[in-house]
Image (tube, rainbow, N blue to C red; front, side, top):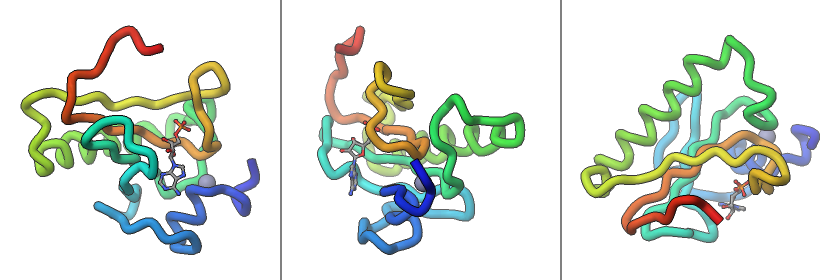
Length: 116
Ligand code: AMP
Ligand code: ZN
């Protein structure tokens, strides 16, 4: 999908309102509009990267940053100790519905494995 039509690019730019829970120069974190757990956040890299398949070596630090931001948020929100899940869905069979790479942070309940 073109960057101009991308839902998450519009959220990151403020064109579509979604109050950020956290933001820095690399990522914006919002609450998922359809939460699948008591705590469900989306970590959105500011750069329009379509999916995990489009990651390049220059993104290595960004992906590490995403995980550290998610873990810190889980601590701050008080569900780190009981456990949580960081999920990236990629492509049709992976369940990706928005073509801008994002990482779900889910917590606050026992999550099943394997996923459906
Ligand atoms: P995925 O299915 O992995 O591509 O995840 C996309 C996620 O974006 C889903 O969990 C949706 O509920 C969520 N979502 C879609 N539109 C919005 C929105 N306007 N604000 C926040 N989350 C959204
Ligand atoms: Zn985008």
